[in-house]
Amino acid sequence: MRDPLLELPGYVLQRAANAASADLNKRLSSIGLRQADFAFLKLIDAEPGMIQSDAGRVLEIKSANMVAFASRHEQSGLLNREPADGRSLALTLTIKGRKTLGMANQIVTEFENDLIERVPERLRPMVVPILIALWDSPDTAQKTDESA
Amino acid sequence: MRDPLLELPGYVLQRAANAASADLNKRLSSIGLRQADFAFLKLIDAEPGMIQSDAGRVLEIKSANMVAFASRHEQSGLLNREPADGRSLALTLTIKGRKTLGMANQIVTEFENDLIERVPERLRPMVVPILIALWDSPDTAQKTDESA
DNA sequence: TATTGTTATACTCTATAACTATA
DNA sequence: TATAGTTATAGAGTATAACAATA
Image (tube, rainbow over all chains, first blue to last red; front, side, top):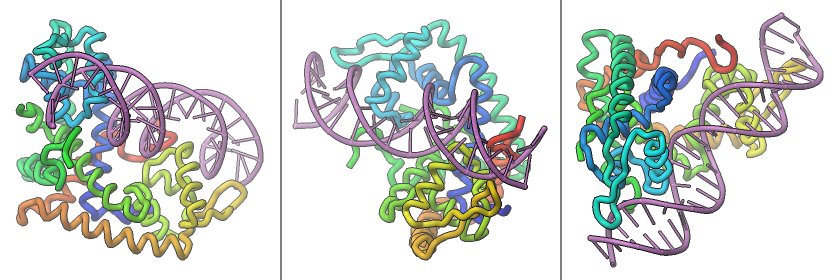
């Protein structure tokens, strides 16, 4: 049974992402995380004190969905949410959060290595530039909650 | 707010696929389809009479999820499901299904063109080979239902 | 007036378990 | 015994609408 869609970049992009996603989630499950959790912790670690809504904008998680997402990590003891002003919540990693991120970094680094090694060596430098270019689609600009 | 994950191929792969996926689904919604529907119709069109379980294996849709999926398209009048033997169902497109696929092909072609045009011209020939290589992850081989 | 966080809700996608009937 | 199709169900992920409190 041949797959008649193998020459379509958009289709293969989707299939590749699904496979990689399943692989990474399987690996991260050993420390109780999903890929979105890793991205969240990594972002907060890079920008300690950033507010919840800004994190949602970067990761394209809507504010309504951000509540349970961030709250879950707070209750897991991975991060603190402290009022930055009367309405904003500043996010910082806890000790446990940084330790968990450290383990996640190892898993992700190994995953990324395994992934990139599947690409012939001389094509590897083109991988991220191509993916970034593909990512830059009509609406990627800046939308998560608002936008028209 | 910088995204500290932009150098990770796996992460950018995921983000690119999500953006492309949202774009294509938006375009296909004008004819009441999703990207998975298009792939399904395209596959049946390329292999008329193929059985439901084989389609599920190619598209990596589990048999339990294939039931409602295929049944929905049958009820929409896009395909016929006829017994191939006592237990298998052979899939063929109806006239309406072929007509719908024709419209979908136009939309998808336009989408794929818009997508590939975002990549600098000299990198374009590398796009599909790189994505296919990335797709070939540990478990992609052949698993959908069974496998260990 | 626009933004932040929130609740409630619903829809899609995907996953597992268990079952039947057929090969 | 393995396969094809099925049902029921549960968990993610994502979407909208409406709201209170604050900038």
